[in-house]
Structures are given as structure tokens and as C-alpha cells.
Image (cartoon, rainbow, N blue to C red; front, side, top):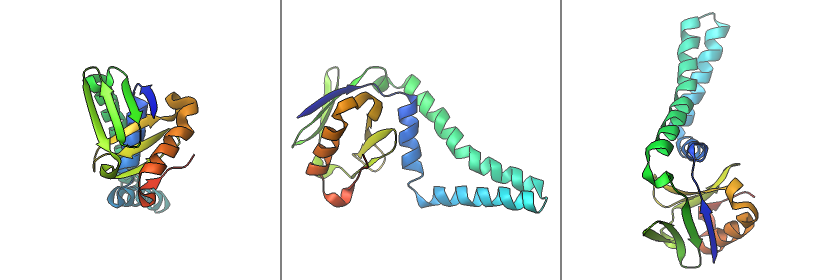
Length: 158
């Protein structure tokens, strides 16, 4: 069993939002089209097109940053640290009097970013393990997740 306490901040939420959002083909396609519009607009001296492309490229990351900051500031769930417990049964998240256990077979996927390890517990929600708060428990967390979830659901890089 592995236990840890983490405090999720706006940077952690932003990291999650980036991974979730850019995991969708349509958002990647929008960024590519926006970037192509910037390049073509500059190349062809069509500056309104370049500006429109820049807005498309900048809009999503900026909105995600603002939304992450707002959620971190206003959501009661992120005011206090979360307590995580990982064992062979599942992933338990507790805070104060509330506690929820998600069985490993109900987890959708586990992925990593340079900043965190994310265990998606639904199509839109994930448990965030910020690497800078796990310290020396990172290998243990990765081992536990890898051991208890199907290999095709795990894409975590150390």
C-alpha cells in the first residue's frame, strides 16, 4: 500500500487540462490549421489571416490556463490536500470526512506528463499525482498502477 498527500494547484490542473484537451484529434487539428494560417498569412502578406491563425493557436492554451486558475481558486476540493491510497484493490481518494475508492478495473487509462501522473477514472476526470509532491514515491506509484491496470491502458514514462 502506498499513501501520499497532495495539494493540487493551478499548474497541476493546467497540466491535466492540456493533456486531456490535446489528447483529442480535433483540438490538435485546430492548432495545426491555426499554425498553417499564421505561416501562410505571413508568407502571402495576408496579415488578417495570420492574425486569425494566431488567435486560433493562442486561444485554447490561454483559456485552459484561465479555467485552471479559476477552478483551483474556487473549488473547495482543491483548497485542502487530498490523501491518496493505492493498493491492490484500487485507488482511494479522501479529504476530510469524504472518501471514494475507484477499483483498478474501472480506471480508463493512466498516462504521464513531465509534470504529473494521471489516472483517468472517467472519460473527463482523472486523479492527478504531481511528480514534485510524490518525491521518492514516484517509482512505487508507477509500479502499483502498472501492476494493477491492464498494460494497454498504461502509458507512463518515468
